[in-house]
Image (cartoon, rainbow, N blue to C red; front, side, top):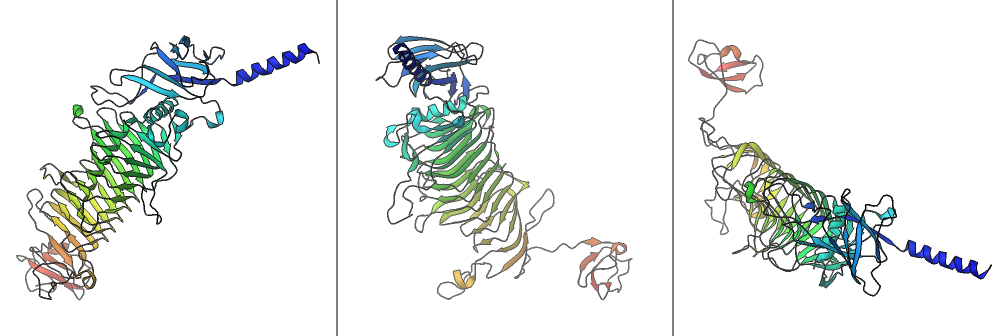
Length: 562
């Protein structure tokens, strides 16, 4: 081979290596931020005009800034790009496609541009997505996150959310680390955030208590870690601990809006620890809190020592499901409500296989504190060492409550007080309550089947004898199995009083029997059936008409009037 051939081969190989070393960066002038002063529908993901000037900054100053447009690609948008100095360049997106594209040797660059009037200046670290096999999958470390518990990784997380928004969805992996966030990170639609596990820090998993290796830490007060705004759909967070350094005005997930709804949120094996509120969803005042935050699924999550509430919901919403989750509440006290769930308004709210409580001598607040709701269902759940199990309408709002929507409690255990102060229909089946758990006024209708209203008297002292052995005046259901208890409060112009059926039968009101004329008495009935014949004569067997009315009992295959 001649020298010229060798030289040509070397030059060609070098050119090929240079060509393949170029990384491709594409995107839009995207904003991912949640305003709170909008006067019209404003999505969390927005775009500024393609005429906006973008500054590209070199993050690796050890090598020269070598960026060019993707002009050689027929599919690339027409981007204008010019260097301004050794470490930065100016870029403008394609006016028609509203996209930009450039190539560079580095694995990451920083872009900045002026956002809209609510977001202010925007700064992102951007990464390429060269490999089609991994497109749509991101690692937070690629965006510059350090995860050492010291460095501020806020820009890295905001940059990752911008990349996911640009892609209209994607999965972000969070390797083990202690990632510090100092300001809200807005979530775009289709975001999936995945850590390595959902343990809570200092959990008693061994004789050495340690932090969760996969956690995102909020540093600061009166702020939130992740923020959800209008138009956001289908977000998943799983296998991660969200933890706060302060419980003063902080939230792990803060969701708010005024116009367009947000829907489809899944939290799986997530720990919410040390916040004021774990999940805090509320409507903005410009539409009188009418915002919809719907279809939220919380599964196998832990809410640990959140000051005001694990969940706080003050918005129009529907279809929330909390399943297989645990609430560990701090002690209730001044400025610390220590509630597990606080619901101002809700439609179709389900709590299933969920447990919570405080500690002996350090009672938590209320397990489920609710002002008003549509159908509320509690299945196979329990709480203990709380000030209250369930409170409905603590504010005593005269407009709260509706007989049309039932509150259902199935196969659950509640000993701490349950207080209802509104018009509600309650259906309870197969549940266990303490003898003095329930407090419900005349507006409440209760339908109970197979419940126990006092635990076994031989075990937990539910009998009629006090600690000294003397009889007490506390009228509890001593070992009673309540078969059915119905409330018949005033409804329109019909007044009534509660009636209890059970092992120890007690009627607190006259019994109203069915009233039938003699010609409508059934020809066949079970012996012992009892009714009132409106036109029967007394002391007739079989019953005869023409009288002023008499009680009738079916005995020996015929009706006898008493």
